[in-house]
Length: 190
View 1 (cartoon, rainbow, N blue to C red):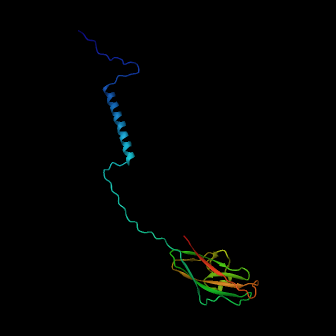
View 2: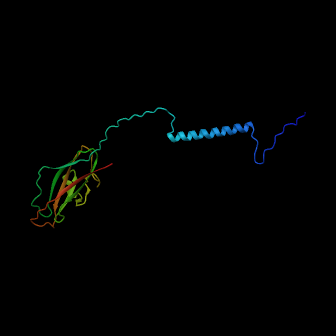
View 3: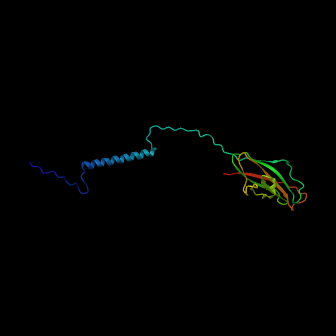
């Protein structure tokens, strides 16, 4: 008997017959998809494949903030000026010391009646205090003869002498007594 040569039978329309190479490619694709799914699942857990881990803490020490500390006290006679007549001035010296850890820009203000007297302040010599800017109720820079109008900066541990000049004006009421306070403020500079 004679057999007819073997011919592939066409698959129904839309289907192809799979050969061994095509089946192997399909298996590799399925394995690739499974491997990608495994990697994605493990990366959601933490992204590490290590079985053990360890952690250590190091004591960072204690942080201490610096301080701004200005000290002021009168030098010499502590008596306030008295028996002043219009046009007369009296000066007093105060020592200012920075006991803090940061540089301080100094400013000054006066809490006092404004009629009858003016207040002036200058860091350094009292001989030039009469030409210093007038001190009012709002803080203004405490300047020196050499600071060019800028506030004097007091470094940590340093001290200086400030001269306060009080001048009686023509508006001074005879026999008047006035109480005034000089406020000196140190503000940290950076």
